[in-house]
Structures are given as structure tokens and as C-alpha cells.
Amino acid sequence: MSEAWTILDAGRALRAGTISATELAQTYLARIAADEPRLRAFVTITAERALADAARADAELRAGQDRGPLHGIPLALKDLVETRGIRTTAGSQVLAEYVPDADAAIVQDLVAAGMVLLGKTNTQEFAWGVFTPPTRNPWDTARIAGGSSGGSAAAVAAGEVVAAIGTDTGGSIRIPAACCGVSGFKPTFGRVDVRGIIPLSTSLDHAGPIARTAADCALIMDAVALPTLRGSHAATLDDPLAGVRFRLLAGPWADAPDPRLLAAVHDAARALAPAITPYDAFAPSDIHQAFSDYRSIQAPEAAAAHEAHGWYPARADRYTPTTRDYLARAGQISAVKYLRAQHTRQAMQQSWAEQCDAAEADIFLAPTLPILPPTVAATEDAAQSQGIREALLRLTFPFDMLGVPVLTVPCGLVDGLPVGMQIIGRPDQDALVLRVGHAFQQRTDWHQHRPPEL
Image 1 (cartoon, rainbow, N blue to C red):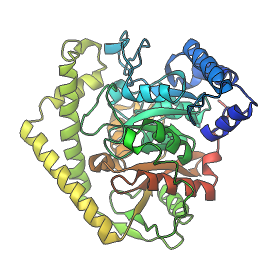
Image 2: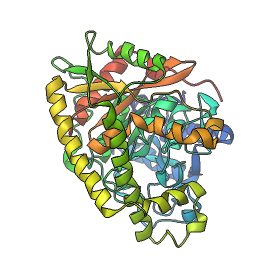
Image 3: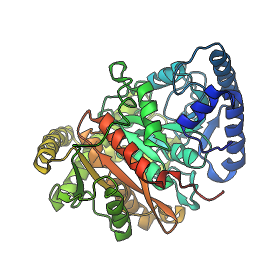
Image 4: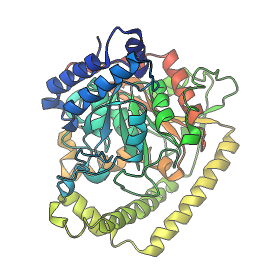
């Protein structure tokens, strides 16, 4: 069998009896064992739990108890997601020995859906960053996998797991998904319950799937979305796109310094709308102010969470120097500046709605990243790292501020590395965004490209 199956493929095989959930889990565990010394996508591998989950799934399926598309499917969770009886480190020595006594809400949903849990994937410390050391990119292990859900994206791309859960506060699902050539979905804010997920920024945090395809993302969303929204994501995947209005998002929020990336996205966009035209949203100065406002919200909320949990400053010596510096500087942001940024954010949301109307657009398309995945060496260079961080966030963070649904899909290769395209919708149009992504992947084969063998 292939370790690069989709949820749909694996589900069909399970129900046809051509493979068991136990055999599926064993195959993926073997792939993890082979690749992890170089990839380092996982913090904790739960082999014993996975085999027990798989045996239970096999018994239930034989008895005619089918929990749905995720029943017997090997998944992984970003190590911010609390798991009962399994350590949850948030990528930090601060929580190196933390073993929760309850599952996060999203884990409860996935357990009810019959998932097989393979393990917990690497995250940059407390999700505060876009590099995710020590995880490497399966397309080129000299390069980063992106972050902070880098472990989840790398594991999916390398075929270590069928799909995984990530979180996105400034782009932490979409950035690594684009770096690793897979699909990643940030839902509308509040659509997925984040209780039990260690917070970065409470008014910006989103949780969502990283998978090979938009269809797989939709299947996961049907399991983890708020109960009133379940079943609304995959049901319309094959509906026609007739009447859907597309625009390219131009201007400072969507221009790529590497013109080859922009060209790849523009070529890909024509697979959805041959006559698509650009729309220049926001003036050049707005992107810089928006990023300042983003930091004025995200950083104080992170500091408040760490203080409330008793981690900082009590365990300050256990943080990496970078995160400790972030927390120290976050404490210097005034309440007035925070509130002003939140008011500005509300104005941005209103402006976005107005511009969607003015552009006569249901869906905007844009690059996910303005640069190719950087090398690990570049991110470790103090003179380059800050500029790289800002570049990786520049085209993704605005949509966390807006809270709108965004899917990134692979749409090309440049220098043998994947390029991602964002499919951006209006609030609560998650099903439409996923349907557009599915249509794109029915018309192209970029999602079928695989990284070279590790």
C-alpha cells in the first residue's frame, strides 16, 4: 500500500476489507520509524495507543459500527493540543513533563469519530514562531518546514500520517502547509472549539486540519466543527462553481518578492477562472500598521495566558531566550495600545466586507508565502531571521485578524520546492472555500506531487 493515501482512499480500503486499521497503523508507524531521525516531525509517538485505537476500529467496523470517514484513520495532533494521559509539551521545557488529565474538545470529537492517534507533532515553543525547530522540510531537509505547525505539515507531506491537526494564529497552519506542499485550512474564527488547546492569543487562535487535499480537510472539519455546523463542509464539495465570483488579491497583502511564486499563483488561478482579474485591497501603508496592530493584540494576550497559568515569570529560566524576550517585551505594551489595536481590527473587518462587495468577489486568490521555504541556516542567522519571520507572516496574518476562512493548496513548484495558493472567503463561507479548493484539485495535480525520498 501507499503511505500517501488520502482519508477517502484509506476509508474505501478499510470498508472494502483490503486492509485493516491495524495494518494501516503499522505501516504508518514503520514510516515514522524510518524517517524521524532526519525529519523530526514528532515530539511523542503513541505506538501503543495507535495499535489499541486501530484494534478497536477493526472490531467496530466488523460489527457494522461505522463512526464515519475518520474511523480507523491514522492522525496526529500538534503538541499544543491537550491529550489525556499523554504529555503535551507545547514545544517547551516549561511543560516538558506536563500530562493532562483531560482531552481537548477537538480530541474528544476526533476520538468519537474513530481516529487512530499516532502521536503529537512538533511546534515552535508555545506556537510563537514560524520556524518549528528541529523539524525539517521533507522536500529538502536543509530547509525549514514552516511553523508553528511545522511538525504536522512535515508529517503529512512525508507520508508519516494521513492528516494532522494544527493551529493558526498568524498563519501557523497555512505557512507550514505551503512550505511542505500540502493543504491546510484555517476556518472562520470560532468554528472549531479551542478549549484544551494551549493558547497563544485567545482572540486570534484558530484550530484546523492539515491534509493532502481540500476534500480531506472538509472531512475533518465535519468531525471537529461546532455541532450545528457538522456535515456542512463535505456535503457540497462536488457542487458546481457556476456563479462563484473570483478575484486575485493584489497590492501589498499579496505581492510576492519572488516573481516566480506570483506567476505560479496567477497561472493556477486561471484553472478556476480563466478571465480572473486583480483587485488591489488596502493601501501600501496599511500592511505595516496592520502588522503592528496584530503584534499589539497577540503579544499581550500571550503574556496574559502565560502569567495566568503560572508559567511566566515563575519558570522563566526554562523558556528559550527568544520566547522569554517576546514575553518580556509583550509586558511593555499598554492596555490603551491593545484596545486601540482591537478597535482597528474591527474596522479592518468592516472594510474587508465592504471591499468584497466592491470587488464583486466571493473568493479571493493570493500567494500563501512571498518567498520559498528558507534554509535552516538562514533562520539561525540573527541578521536574517527577523526579516524571514516577517516575510513568512506577511500574507497570512491579516486573515487571522479578519477571522475569515482560508485554505492553502499546493499550486506549483519553483526550484523543486512547493508553492502555495490561498483561497480566501467571507466569514462563515468555509464550505465554499473548501469546495473551491476541491475543484482546483480536480482540475490540477499539484496535490499529488510528492517530496523526494528522505
